[in-house]
Image 1: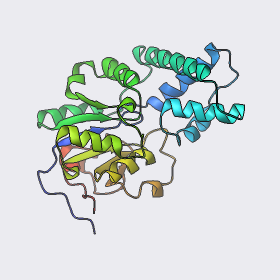
Image 2: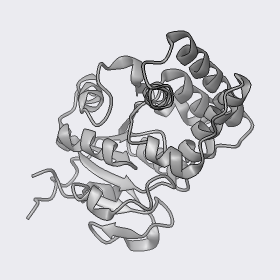
Image 3: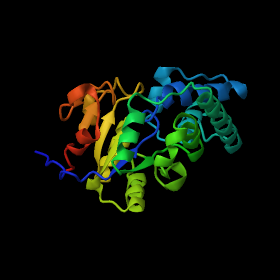
Length: 254
């Protein structure tokens, strides 16, 4: 049986971005990639099922590269990869600015509660810094200062499921793994968090909601959202909202 974390030990929340802070994957990144293909006169369009399959590859540039390798039967031209990625970044920012990508329910409330309680908070993501900034500047503008530490794709040599990003965040915050909780939505994110010794709340997104729950067996808690929430695995949640007191009681890593 897993031991409970020591009462009062929670000192930080570590936020994933895509699928956790906002439904960026299917409504943002996928649409932006499709607009980039169209802009460059390429015949591809990713439907939702195709994109969910491609999410097995961490990182947008890596995802695009893997797709092009399959389509072209070899390594894609660096110039094409760069042109597509740059076009995609521009389209993604336009989608965010237009309000097409929204924060998930409960995110703002939990960030504000953590700040009021004096907890540190950080972004830990495989997304690039530009995409993260676009989301925070437009959807969390008045709260973005509450997330001063942002570990992004450019900061690490290995992306999730590698734990490097989470270990770097803990190092920069001066914390032990037991003092923080990671919030994730994907198997890769969960693997990265738990490999770093963190408790992890997985809040399933539109891109991961249909995955077998067995993919998330290492999660301290598995839910379908922050509010309203249905707990699929882990401690019961009174009131239908994920709160700081709920995160405090999550089982520690064995």
